[in-house]
Image (cartoon, rainbow, N blue to C red; front, side, top):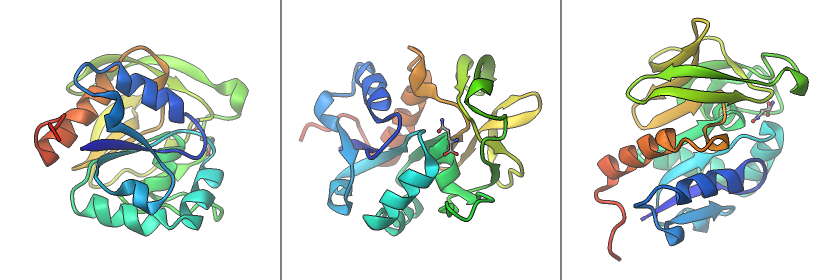
Length: 199
Ligand code: GLN
């Protein structure tokens, strides 16, 4: 039973490090994913923030797109953060990145402006509570349908959930607060049984 972090570019190590801080997740249960064979045995998938055009290109070249779509439709939990959310959206509004249509949102890339317009803000997350959200060249969610709004910023959703899929416009891996990753691990446990599994 393993959690896979798409491992080409972006906040890969940051997600791995925060997963390691969760007491019941063992080191050997966290894995970087680069090929379809890395996906075997994976019970939860994280697509990190980074540069969505680069991550998309590499996922496509390595045939990960259809494989992941199939796994998620079969119930495997997935969390996409920032660029990761762009990659799982219905509409990216950018020809260089095609969304996987795993969550029914439309995206405006770099919706708050450039790198210098990055910011952090305390938000209130459903079932989790206050969370310091770090927004770095973040996308904005423009048209959320068929999903639960887990958190908003100035009335605009910044964290959405549709069943086994979580999409965040911010970076939950960049503070010491493990609560969003724990929430995700709980989804994996519920879907896939006890975690860790003694095998
Ligand atoms: N602006 C980036 C993109 O569109 C996303 C930024 C991030 O993941 N921090 O790919």
